[in-house]
Every structure is written in C-alpha cells, then in structure tokens.
Amino acid sequence: MPEFHRVDVSAEAAALLRTLTVQHGPLMFHQSGGCCDGSAPMCYPVGMFLTGSGDVLLGDLEIGLDETVPVYMSGSQFEYWKYTHVTIDVVDGRGSGFSVESPTGKRFLTRSRMLDQAELEHFALA
Image (cartoon, rainbow, N blue to C red; front, top):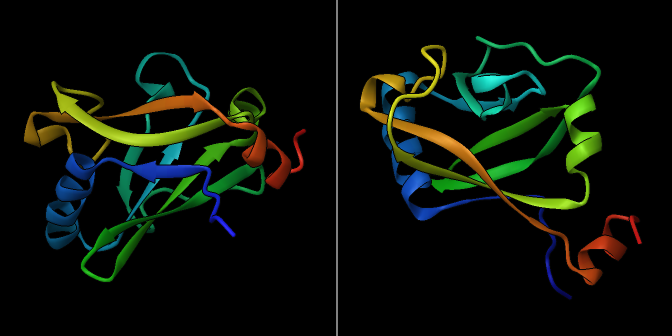
C-alpha cells in the first residue's frame, strides 16, 4: 500500500535545512494566510513560534541527520490548500527577515499540486 503525505521537501531545501539545523537546533515551518511574505513558509527554531489550536500539522519533513521538521499551516489557509500536496523548496533571494534562512541569500517557498484521486480518497476528500 502506498504512503500518502500532504507535504514533502525538495533535495535542495533538505540540504539547507540540515545546515540550518546544525546552526539553530530543531526547526519547524509555519505558513499563515497573511499577505506578502506572510503566505510564505516561515522556518523557525522550535519554540520560537507557538502554534495554536487552529493550526494544522501537514506532516514532518525527513531531512536526514535523524531529524524531522514539522510543517504547520493556519487553519484558514488550510481550507484553501486542503486539496493540494505541498513541497517545501528553496530559491535564491531574500524572504522575510523572521525566517532563519534569510541571512543565507536563499528563501523557502511552497510549490503545490492538486491531490490525485488516490490521495483525495486517502484524505477523505473525494
């Protein structure tokens, strides 16, 4: 039986996350429904951003180093994204100053695709 995930990580983003984990300790992502950089995935050291009861855990990213990075999304944003599969990726450029990758000259971003029929059924969305 196939494994289903709502969130994955690109190889390039996983490599940057490994480097950032060595520097900052365990990390987590949160994506809110705000404007501008507020709708980008923001990466924080665990404990620097507190999730609330309205936040949805999309899943944990396997980055190596025996580490996982949880990815949360605000509940209101998830309502728009619940039919999508999310991949955390990284590109050149500066994002928000609050996300730990900002001094590296890289920024995390979300790539998405629509869930396929098997995923829709697995997540009880069909």
